Image (cartoon, rainbow, N blue to C red):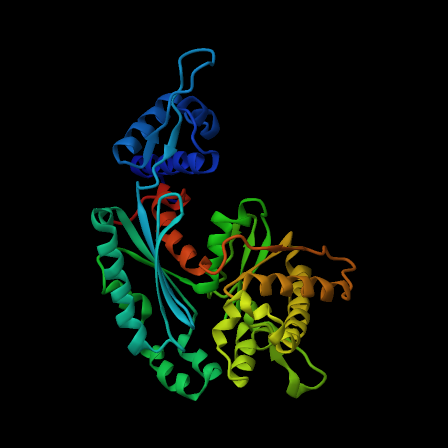
Length: 392
C-alpha cells in the first residue's frame, strides 16, 4: 500500500479536466465542475493554470441564459504536439499530431523492405524535416511515439531471400534506443497494430464500442484487442496478434496462419508475377476489371480465413464488434468485409454472440497516428499511478 501526494492528486485532477473537455467539447467552468464532480474553486484554479500553460482557449461568451454570461473553454489545438514514427514493411511514415489528435503534417519514405541500413538514416531525416517544418512550434512537442512490427528481423523470411539477408541485422538493433539517441524528446514504443488499435480506440469507433477485436489489413494482417474500453496488451504485448492465428487444412501439411491467407502480401505477389506494380493493392485501381481473377481468388481465401478467426475470437472474448481497417485500397477492404460477412453466414454461432463487422474510421495512417497519440496519452490522460508516491 502506498499513499498519495498533493502533486500527484493535482496532476490527476488536471488530466480529468482535460479529458472532460476533450470528450464534451467547449464547456463553461460551471458545467465542467458538475461533469468532473470537482468543486467550482478547484476547477477554476485548474482552468487558470491550463490557460496559462496554453493548453486551453476561451471561446465567445454565451449570452441569453439566466445569470451571468458563461465562457466556454476548449482545448487549444496548438497547445501541444506529438510525433508519430511508423516503421512499416513497405514504408516509413512520420506524422505530427496536434493536441486534438489531428494530423497536421506527414512525411513518407517508401522501400521494398525495411533494411536497417536504409530505415535508420531516413528516420533521422524525417524527424529533422518535421523540426524544420514546424519552426517555433517544435518547442511544444511533448514526445515521439514509435510503432513497428515486433521481431522485424523475422519478417524477412516472408519477403524473400534478399529481404531476409538485409533485415537480419534488426535482431541486434534496439529500435527504441536507436530513436532515443536521435532526440532529447521522450520516446514511447508500441507494436504497429497495437498503435493502430489505439488510434481507433481514441479517435474512431472505440468511442462508441467498448469491446472489439481490431483487424488491420496491410502488407501483413495484424490486430489488437479492446475490452471494457481499454487496450489489452498481454504480458508479452501480443494480445490480439491475429496474424499468428492458426488455420487448419485437410492435412497436417496445409496447416498455416491467418497472415498467410488474409494479408495484402499474397495479392501483391500475384501482381508481381503478372508483371504489375504491387502497390496497386493500396490503390482503388485494383478494382479494375483487368484484375478480377486474382482479386477474386484473394478475396475468397482471405474472407474464409478471417471469418474463422472472428468466430473463434468471439467464442473466447464475447465481442461487441470486429473493427476492420487497413492500408489496402478502401474499396478492396469494403469488398473483403462483404465477403467475410458472407463466409460468417455459413458458420454456426450457437451459444455465442455474433459480433458486428464494422469498418474502421482512421484508415491507412492508423499506425502512425496511434503512435503519435502515445506521448499525448502519457502526458495528459488520467492515470491512477500518478497518485502514488514515486521514488526520487
